[in-house]
Each structure stands twice: as C-alpha cells, then as structure tokens.
Length: 143
Image (cartoon, rainbow, N blue to C red):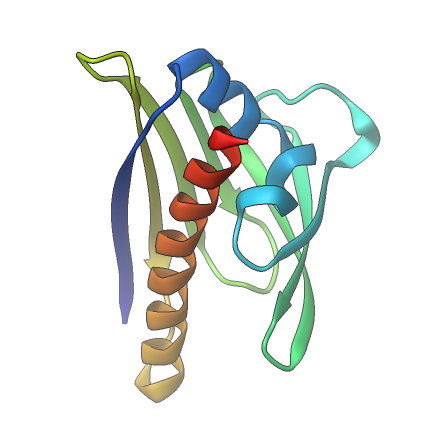
C-alpha cells in the first residue's frame, strides 16, 4: 500500500519566520506530532547529506527515526528520506509566501506502508500526524 499525503495550511506569519522555525531540527518537538527529541547527527549544521535523528512516541512504542536530508533550499524546502526500519518514506516540508504576506506551509509524506491492515493503520496515523503537525506549527507561530 502506498502513502501519498500532501497537506497544507496557511500560517499568519512571514515566510522567513515560519521556515526558520520549522527547518531547525531542534524545534521539531514543538511542532511535529509524536516527536519527543530531534537533533542533527554529529551536531553539524543542517545540509544535504546530514542525518536527522528523531525520538518518537507512538501509542505503545518509543522509536528512533533516522532520516537523511536529500534536498535543502534554506527558507523554502527541506526533504528527508528515512534510512532505517520505518521503510522508504520521503518527508517534504515546503514554504511559500502568499499574497497577503502570510505563509503556506506544506507537509508531504510519500512511500510504502506495507500491506494489509498494518499498512492501512500506518497510512491513517501519518495522515492524522501531518494534519496535527500543521496545526501545531500554526500555533507555535502565534506565540
């Protein structure tokens, strides 16, 4: 079963502020659903090839998710690809300025979810998590 989630939310804050906050792994726990901690492996600056390590809490489980940065356009786009047991997932964070000066934040997750009921459950959980993350990002920008 494939995963193809692409959701967006208008955020009442300038692009520079939203993108800087959302593209800093240290802020992941403040807005990404289920993320308890996040860091760049080796504590180097975020760049293509960097590995981001996220500690996740999902019902009944604690997981460590390692993802490699595959594309980075500072202030506009961050793309990561999982490199561990979660399977081949690509996560894209994209930001653009709207005509009124607000920001359109888009989160996409693409990849394989496995088959049967487990794949369906994973896909639904990711959909809920992406929607929740966008709401949390909007809330974080209001504070």
